Image 1 (cartoon, each protein chain N blue to C red):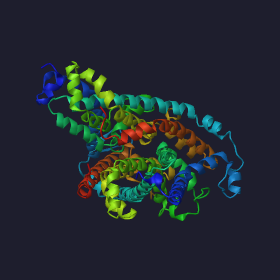
Image 2: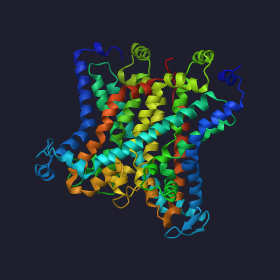
Image 3: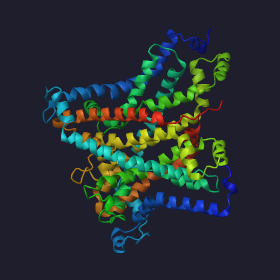
Image 4: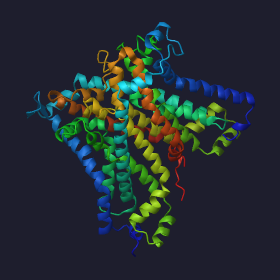
Length: 278
Length: 295
């Protein structure tokens, strides 16, 4: 669609109109959330729920932050998320390398076993895994939140795809340089597949940060609530003061929004890059 | 031949490679065994037993529990609710995602802004989206309170309200993936189609859609699996109500964790596992035939 820039003006205007309407639809829930978070609930309802804020309370964000203990909950979420992403990167890189560049017995069976775990989401294995955590006394704990997610078949699969795209020439060249497996992994394989790895890291980060079902199952004490579970507690505790829950939801979404805007290029490039540049 | 790669070419396995592979795979295998494969065995075991109220004693009840649960009302209703949830979220989500992606796949000034807006819901989690929609469609104070079509207090419509929140939340992801698929289509194909006198609609259905069908297949699988795993939306928006109308399979599994019902929950989890395998397998079979694998 390289000719779009040469479109007649009226067609361009029409496209911008379509894009604007769609943007309004997509952004409407976010806009209403902002409006209602800022408004005083009773005054807002008395005004008949307008599309603008009523009786603005800027202090609502501070109140949500303090009353919801959001700082502690976001710190816990960040700790758990960083643990999971770092561990997944290491375990997936090593596994992907083994499945791509090493010859060993039962390689195909091993890979099939890896892939089979993708059919076993935490929702299926929830009951026995909660039992395991209980018997290890890890309910309401930091390891309890992270342990089942330290390895990932999806990541191993994705990075293996990247590794398989490494041109044989590059392998031959590093062979001539006398690289062993570890050196090849560190100095060639990882740098060359960086877009794929970065893309996986972003996806892994989102998944870990957004987790709900597992933390909900293993956490019963407020101080071990991640930010996602904290949102539920906050909105459930104050149905009549829903502006606090909404302000908390906005605060919870902002770090991820900023991160995604910064890493947008990596994410999109990772998703679109089929062939890896050598 | 001291190079590691030369050996691989000949397809031989060496002790050195095998040991290195074992070391590389060990961390993943430990996690998978402990939190994926052992729990699967454990589910089968729990399904064969009944426990007392405190989980201190259990007795063997055999396959009877499987046939009772899988043939019973609770599992059937959970399955039905999850199935309805798939139908409510996946087609609508796909149509909206494709609409956004086609609209934003232009070379216009400022298009990046629109692309960022369309992708923006990816910054929200299920929990955030649910909290947003809890107020948006709240029957008393919500902006859409008069839209009975999605009322959360009516058993006939509550699941639609829950589904709407999911569709919106998944929009960003769907948009990003479809747009990536669209941008991978070579421009010459569009130009050729245009020269052949294809109008925009015909071009979309005859050229664009077949070209991005692998992307679409991937998306359908992802969205169906998401829908089958839905829990947070239900937990936050309705708590399974009203009148149990939003109790998806996962919600029921979660609800059956007490020692007395844990056998029932375990059988349901195995049921969910089977459904997930069947659905993803079927989708690959059906879609594989229709999908055009462009290079």
